[in-house]
Image 1 (cartoon, rainbow, N blue to C red):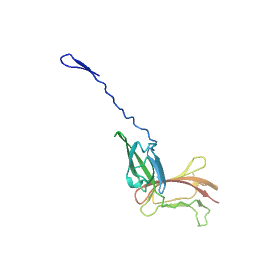
Image 2 (image 1 turned 30 degrees about the vertical axis):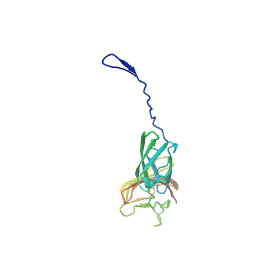
Image 3 (image 1 turned 135 degrees about the horizontal axis):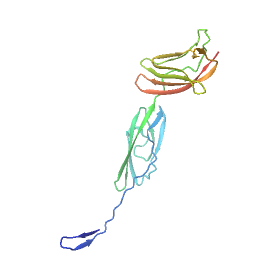
Image 4 (image 1 turned 45 degrees about the vertical axis):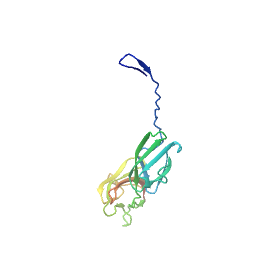
Length: 193
């Protein structure tokens, strides 16, 4: 740099600047975990060069380590702040969505043969829960039956007015539990004759 004073005198200065380049840790974006599932997080940073703080701290096996294990029991926003030796600070946030174990029983077989036993595929939400969407699909991906916003659904194995032959069908359920949390479930049900 050259500075020129009002009287015409100039001076030459050398200035050294250290530019901190943000590290690129391998962190997840928003992530869905099952209840009781752990997640290993590794920033890939040398602990000798970096200080780390994970928040909320009580969810981590080590809240000041670049490599740690996260255990969450409810949906939570995670923040990690990491600072280099010089004092440059970086942060990253992401959401951990915890999917609870469903308290919803879904039968895997029924026999609509008119004998009065298991004649329909019935799914009943616990008290305070709602089956927001229930659908049954053929193995070719054709929608066979659906129901919405009910505490209980019953499918009798009929499609377009005809009783279906014995087969295995895929189902999808979007269920709002009594705590108001939405759970997505999939599976299959066997129709027997």
